[in-house]
Every structure is written in structure tokens, then in C-alpha cells.
Image (cartoon, rainbow, N blue to C red; front, side, top):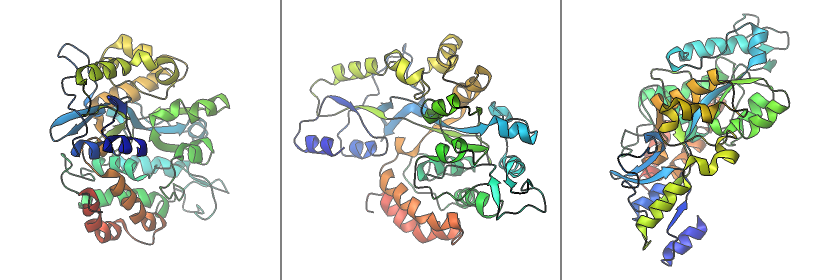
Length: 373
């Protein structure tokens, strides 16, 4: 990004490029990105809405991948507890209360008592039932699930002080503070799957689908028997998707050729073996979510969990319930998320409620969103 900023100042930007998710709309606001709304014709399969970046009513980028948030779980731990696996079909998704109840049964103390047992010792836990990844950008999904969000629908207003959004954040904290089913997590490091599922400390965790092809691939080879399911929900069933944006810079003298190149470069077959078939990237174009032959080509391969899990979670769930992450439609998310992460630190430890933390920092969060932080 430093190099791109220098090139932009000198008027020497390339025709197109792959940018960072979190900062791309700042470039759109400054007029540095071309409108790519016409990149795909009416008869062409185009990326899903959850893979589309918009600013001021225009499409300014399409994601190079469409990775969504899912639930991972340790099948051996469920088997040992005699519990059914988390649902893979969205229509069967657990409510939040059901999720907490299952997590209690999977949380064990040193004496083998679970968290639903009156004699459970919360000060001597050897296995946690769950961990919710609480990186600031991933927390957005729970606010949405509770009928609110960080922002309003078009990203023009900060709504994280809405009671429903605050309630969702507190419910995440209460997994550790009240229910004792999750370990303390600071929300600062992007290694949640490694710290929970792979470390063998948690029976369930939430995180991005890219983990299938990265850390979970090696862990499975080493014996981890894991599965995937849809996220539990509070009021609404939802997941969020993200992926690096392919852009055309407005300084280009060749906008049509740049769009043609990006459209070719973004074709799934051009990143198939090392990324999509490997389980690191999910396809962006609608055909892979609607055409059974393409879906099978994508998911019926050794990198992924069995088709009966993979298709309903990675295909159907994403097609029907995925929403774009906030940096797809609103600006200054880097500053907002950094401030939010700092504000929530005392919430995770119980030194402050989510209501106190959000209300104390709301004006600063608004300023960050408005570019004045």
C-alpha cells in the first residue's frame, strides 16, 4: 500500500491491481478507482453480491475470492460426548441458546464434569466447548445476526450503539465470563483455529473458510478429525464474506483492456489447483453456487470435508445467507476496527460491559468512520 500511495501521488499507478480489503473504499472516495459495473455482460456469470465492492452506488471492485465465516468442530470430541454434530444445513441451524447448551456439554473440568453439571469446576477446565473468533471485523456477523450491525445498510451511519448490537457483543463475552464454555481471547491475533481446534483445547470454533486449505489441511494429515457447519444464529441466519478486491485504477489510459484482463485473471480456472481446489479460496462467480456440475467440481475433492458437509455450508449457505463484510460498502474500516478492538479489550476480561465500552467510545468510533479519527 505504501508503494501504491507513492505511485498514485506521482500519477504512475498501474492499470489494475489486487488491493487490501480494508482500505479499498478510501481509494474509491478519493476517485482513484474506476467504475467496473460494466465489466460483466448480461449473459455472463458474474460474482455474487457478497463478493462485490460498492461505493456511492457504483461497483468499484470484485473480490478475487469469496471466503465466508463457518463453524469448525472436532468430531472426536462430539463422539466422546455422545452429541450430534453441528448442522450443515442452514434450515437446521442452532439458535444461540442451543449453541451455548451444546458448548456446556462439551466443556470439561479436570474431574470430567461438564459445564452443565452443578459440581463443575470453572477454575479447572481442561476442554472448552467453543471459541468465537473475536477479531473486530469478524464480530460484525453477530451484530447482524442479532438484527443490527456495525453500520446501517448503506454504511453511512454507525449503529454499533444499537441495543441489539451491544447485546450481541456481550453474548460473545459471556461465553467466557458467564457460561465458562470458551477461553479468554483478546481478539488481537488472527490464529484462532490454531489456538482452539488444532491445539485440542476447544470442541468448536468459528473462522474463515480459507482455513480448510491452510492450517486445517496439515492438521487433518496429522490426525485431526474435523467437520464444518453453519454458524448458530441469534435472530437472523447470516454469515459474512470477504476477499481481496481486484480494481482498475482511474488513472489508466486503458480501462476496457484493464477490465478484460481482470475478468480473465479472476476466472476460477486460473487459480484452481493451488488455491480453489486446495481449499484456500472459494469461487466468486454465481455458477459455482448454482450449477451442480460446477459445485461438484469445486467441492468433491480431497482438500474439503465430505460433500454432505461441504456443499450445504460452503455453497448453499453462502449463496443464500452471505452478506459482504463492511469494508465492501463503507470507508475507514481500518481505523474503526482498530479502535473497536481496543475498546472491547476490557469487555472480554469482564472489567467493563459491552454497553459501557461502546457508549464510552461511540463518538470516537463515529469520528473514525467519518475519517476524522
